[in-house]
Image 1 (cartoon, rainbow, N blue to C red):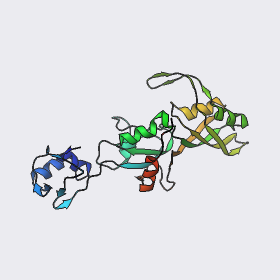
Image 2 (image 1 turned 30 degrees about the horizontal axis):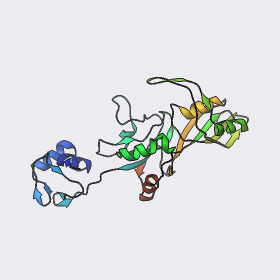
Image 3 (image 1 turned 60 degrees about the vertical axis):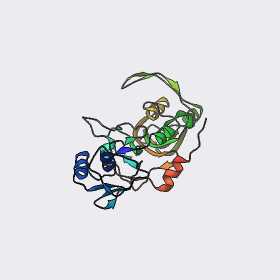
Image 4 (image 1 turned 90 degrees about the vertical axis):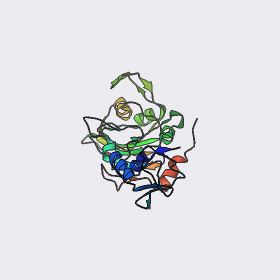
Length: 252
């Protein structure tokens, strides 16, 4: 794989694209020990040695960030009118994107990366990657609701942003009652699903007579939300977390 020299510099956060081109034209960049003054020069990140003012820039092909998504931010890479999750990541890279999506009012774990293969790995229906949420519900689900989740709820068709999503029967899911308040008719639950249909968790709660008042994703596969991250904060994945995500076996 080769990339343009100016893109290499931008990806490595040496500056903006225009700044990178200016650095190159001024002779501040060397490739394998020789000054290079053409921004369009192709370099091989894995083998070529690129230096800025004599300091080597080591190319990182992929980046992986754990974000604690805050409510009110949309899950998208770019949007001309609204703040997106990618806007929260202080990286010069323009190829970062969220893995999957969370509703605007949903908080919690979201993986941001530029690794398309890993993204397919996590989102492929064949792999049945679990997603776990904590929710505050209006209503207190009983044993029959727990059983219905386990057996597979039937959801009705619903309008989404692109048209009508047909009704379907959910794959078996887990509903755990963590706490409840009978006076307030409110409960705290943990819900684990292995698919990601439109507003699925909210629709599943509604199917058993409850309403989601607060929703936060706390896990995706082996990746768990770092509780030290406040809403809107993020960090790079640790080597252990990345290895755990990459080592998941395919489930057919």
